[in-house]
Amino acid sequence: SASWCPPCKHFTPLLKKFVETLQSFGETSLKVIFISSDQGEHDMWKYMYDAHGDWLALAYSCREGKERLERQYQVSGIPQLVVIDSVGRWAVRDARGEVMAAVSGSSTQILTTFMKWKAAAGASTNSSPTSAPPAAAPCNQLPVGIRVRVRGLTGAPENNGLEGTVGSYDSERGRYVVEFG
Image 1 (tube, one colour):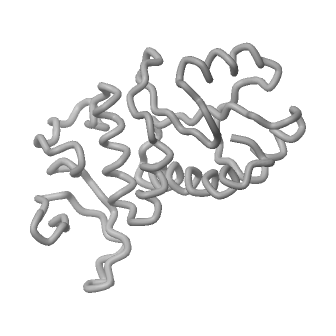
Image 2 (tube, rainbow, N blue to C red):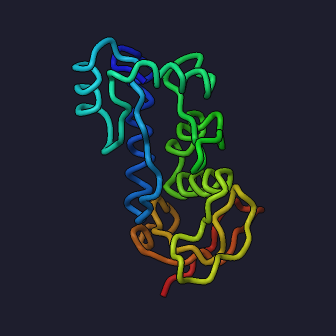
């Protein structure tokens, strides 16, 4: 990404919202590493201060590393977001498109997208190492048993903000059944 790039200026706040939504649910395992295509180090740091979340960054002076990563992950334009696994293998190629789609929806879509990324990267989707693993679910659905905070309900707004457990997914209606208490 770069501060001079209009599509980057549009996408960066969406990525920030995506990450902050995950963090609001207690999910802190996602690490964003910013690789700047700015024209100077000052521009990079100003862009990070003004628009980014609390992200990691490749040192601006590490231009060889930037070029190597661009080749490795086939960066042909910016902004680009790549999800990699714990050893640097490509897990999700069009993560930018997935972030844009998820953020335009609900926090459930953001969580679902993140769970899909974790599965693609070979990570456990179980956030608590001592609890029983959640029931199996397709990668585009939240697993049964996962804790969620309900937001964005129009039919039952009194439930917005409550925490519950995913009981099931109604595929006909495209809705989750969340159990409270």
